Length: 210
Image 1 (cartoon, rainbow, N blue to C red):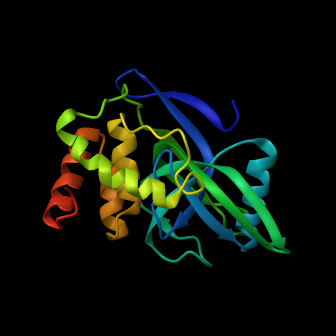
Image 2: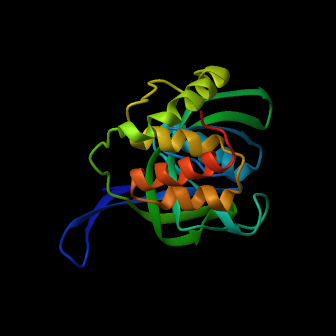
């Protein structure tokens, strides 16, 4: 079935798995988020070209050990699928792309392929039913609406789903000036309401909410 497959978990349920190239970075991509990237290493130029040609995703993961350049880094186990939303190459050998975040995944295994490109077999994390934004968390909205207005659709793409607990939590988390490891922990949370509670406490402590 190519890069997309189904396997059976020990409990007998179907698990969606992918074989994808991985792009370890010093950043965290969230579902629905847009991450500008400057690509110049040949392995990632080839990866991006292949993904655009075949209309397939790659995975963005926060680096656990290692660096962005050179030897393949060790990533954190949970990352986000990415597709190329926009691209341009104004200078030969330097590709500028906007990576659009899709579903979250967990790495099952990794291997180093040609040209030191990290590849992985990943399982897609289950998509829960949409969770409406609870009324008691609506006090988060004025701050987020100001941020969205300041950054514009080029940075926070439409549709803007201010009624979605998942969307609101992801959008606030990705713009917060906090350590990447904290963002990673919030990405890994399965409960969008728990994520909102953590964010509200953080913003309250810093008197950033009205």
